[in-house]
Structures are given as C-alpha cells and as structure tokens.
Length: 339
Image (cartoon, rainbow, N blue to C red; front, side, top):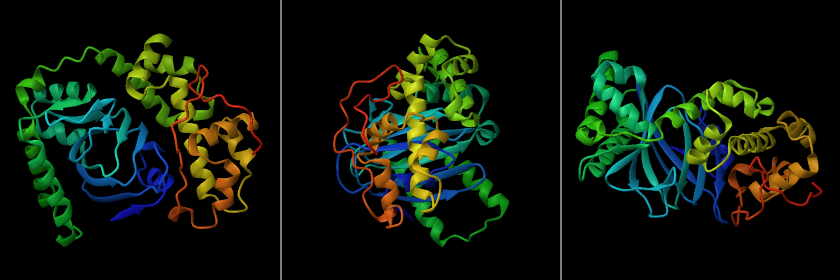
C-alpha cells in the first residue's frame, strides 16, 4: 500500500499524471493507494483523508473510469455530483475532481489497444463519446457490484504470483473489460451526443501539446494553434473542464512544479529565486504571493522544512479557498510579500 502524508508526495507518486492537489480546509492530509497493473489495464484503489481538489493532466492513451465505493454529496467530478446512474470517465484529457473526506473509489485505466481488440467499432465510438462527455451510463444497481469485484481483484493480487503467464494476463484483462461492458447501459451509451464534443476535442489537442511543451514558455497563441480553435473557444473549453482559463491552468501547473522541486531538492540545491525563474516566475515578490495563496506558506518556509521530514507533516494548509481578485490568467493578485 502506498501512503502519503503530503500532497506533493501524492502528485509525484501519480506520475505520469500531472496533478495539482489543493486542500479545501486545514488539517492533516492523508492518501492511501493499492493497485494492480498489467500491460492492458491498471486498477487503482485510493482514498483521501482530507477534502481536496485534483486538477491537471491525465495519462495519455488510456480510457479512465472512476468506480465510486464511498463518496459524499460534496464530491464532484468535473463539477458534477456522483450518482448511481453514471461512471465518471475521461479519455486522455484533463482532471478536475473535488473529493470529500473519506472518498474512496477504484480507478480503472484501460489501454486503447485493449478496447480495440475486444469491442466492436460502434461500441468503441459510443464509449469514446461518453468518455469525452465524462459520463458513462450504467445499469441500475450496477456500480456497487462492479466496484466490489474490482476491489476484490486488487486485494487478491497480494496472494497471486508476481509474474503470470501471458495467457492468464490476457484472460484477466478481457474479464475486467467484460465486467465493465456488462455494467454499462449500452442503449443509453449509444444515445450519448455531447453538445460540447467539438470544444472538448480542441481542449484535448491543447492538453496533448502541454504534455511535451516547456510550460514556462507556452503562449496562448501556441495553445490555440495546437488546439485548432479560437482563443474564445479554447477559453470556454478550459473553463468547462477546469473552471480556469488556459493561462490560469498553466499558472497552476507551474506553481505546483515549483513546490515539488522545493520539497524534493537537496538543502544546497538551487535557490528559490532560481527555481522560480526556471518555471517562469520572474517577479519574485509577486511569485511569493501566488505561492502563499495556493499553499498557505511562503516558499522559504517550504524550503526550511525540507530537511525535517516534510512527508510526515501537514504542508498544504489552504485553511480557506482564497477569495482574492484574479487577473486575466486566473492568478491571484495580492500585495507583494517579502519571502
């Protein structure tokens, strides 16, 4: 089992996802995870001991579904509450999840190649449309047994051999995909016609560009060119997905990258100013204000605690969600503070 006592550790553990985790209230952070991974699929059970928001980039080339086990009415996936009629889903795009304290779910990540080998073309297309709309319809009372079966599979892997024959792995992958398809309400799935599909496609292209771009150098014009849409369309798409403008989303990614570097660096590593410059924050006083608004402490405080077991302490204390004015990049504007 993977246990994290600090959000930066969770962010690092969930690579290649590029997630930014922000606590919604003060208190100790806690995250636990168990997983089962094979070439065509991965199953991840995870639970959160503090309410938080996860925003960022998902892993490419995977169909991802969340199967709720224990959720709260306060939990949200892309702004929508969890209901027993739908599975939250995505197809290699962005994540915006608000998870309540005690939230528990199984994440099912399926390689596109596995989907292509085992599902007919029409069902593949319908599943892709539904995932782009973030909602896969399921049959009545299907979520709970599906979640229990996946969790049993994860738990049972501890008694399984470390390496299985390829035929056994292939059989397991097909069985999991079969269970998923049996839970899906196929008639409703094929009726899925998301109105925002074209806009989402543009955002997907922009996010794919961000996976390989140098984030401090990205300009809005480059994102629009990669997405093949106008600035207004791209902004609407990012607001739909993340509740942020494209530049605001970039700002979020860069801030969390700075924090991970401050926490993971050696005591004699690069200075705070040098790290800030590397991630495109050249106005250091303003950067400190952004950092404190996001993480509840100054960059120097993060660096000072780096050698004292940060992973066992509470380091993200957002106490309140900052109600500050924002500029055009959705970055908090505060008085410049001394770091």
